[in-house]
Length: 171
Length: 256
Image (cartoon, rainbow over all chains, first blue to last red; front, side, top):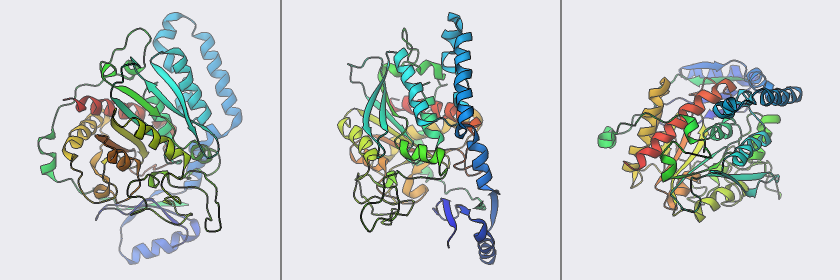
């Protein structure tokens, strides 16, 4: 059927599927599900508007610059050593409030690497569009060749929060 | 557009015999700051035992395209070449050289699961494959983060079968499931991906396993479909936190 896309593909018997359906196809699909007596529920009435709401912040350039300004202020006001020590990873508190650009994510990680000698950021190849892909290493002793726990995120583009979450793992 | 879900039914439970003697109580987990890599001292002893390597964004082109242009984009952004290729992008998690394009992967360039014109056709998958190959003797656990569905998956993706070392994977995986459940009730299912969801070959976890990585896992993070790919950003921190603690429980379970 045209205008239909699986978000969650068919799998085991009795497990559910999630389907994205275009407005012009919606009635046809509902009729077909009803005629086959397949139970369903509508999880999201208007995916387009949900996209607009959840993506609003990072997509508006003026908000991004506002963000930068705010974090500059944060840094300026949190000069006392105690503050810096306890809450450094939270200092730009807006970082996790929206989906950041790839550039912002890597800049944040590079700042951590500058600060902690247990973190190293290594360029490791480039993407099709020539973006640098990075391997981030954490070790208390880089010479010891300890066993490695290797974690990646963001194979699939729309699963957007996962690059961020992966970076959150060690921020 | 509207998103529909057929009435939800629980995914089939794993064979209870396989769960059997795998119960090990996970210790209370370390807070995030302990893994921050402090200059002076490192609180979490797990850092003395293991190195942690991350590729935070395997597919940055797709990430940016999704962020700025087409929110639901899934694949890489490699452009069509030749007369038979109509659409941009390859599904990177069908592009690895283990049982490539055998099952659950498409030959059609416009498909969401297009496997690419050959294994490792994408520079992005070559990065991960290269890291895995060159360090396969040292990499004890490989964890690839996806969304959504709340699953911790093991190989095989390419066949409905339990890998020979499934028992030890199960012990470690369930340590993560239990830890995450204990935090705020987020329930994960565990099992081989072809059995728990559907067969799909050419995935990075199968490839890691074929290289001898002992604990290869795919994690499908929350939720179960109410937000699906459109998770509100307020959830970044709580999901990040519980995922981190689940991961640490899994790492600690490697050695018990």
